[in-house]
Image (cartoon, rainbow, N blue to C red):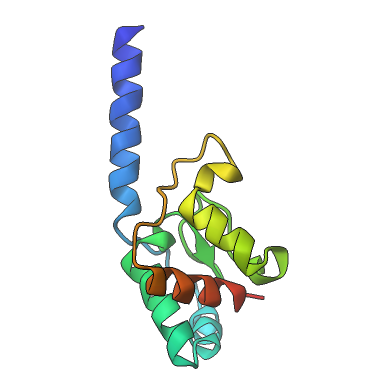
Length: 123
């Protein structure tokens, strides 16, 4: 039993480490990439997209088919949640899923605002 707990702890640590690194899945066409880049047109959204990329969100989450599959897709997230709920989930991911391995956002308030704006643009 003790070895299982150690193994589970090591797996959780490895998973959290992986969340800090970006990993993308290739798609067959560039249409998804074009749609994502077209959405990022103002400086705040550009910064939000950069924060998304820099913090490794795509390790677990996909947008337009690009990114990980461990976490939910973020397509349409801007229709599903308002800014307040997105901030809450980013700061305390366990509010949606008590068993999540998603780490809480630890960046600046400005970066958090930009990330929320970017996620709201994903309609």
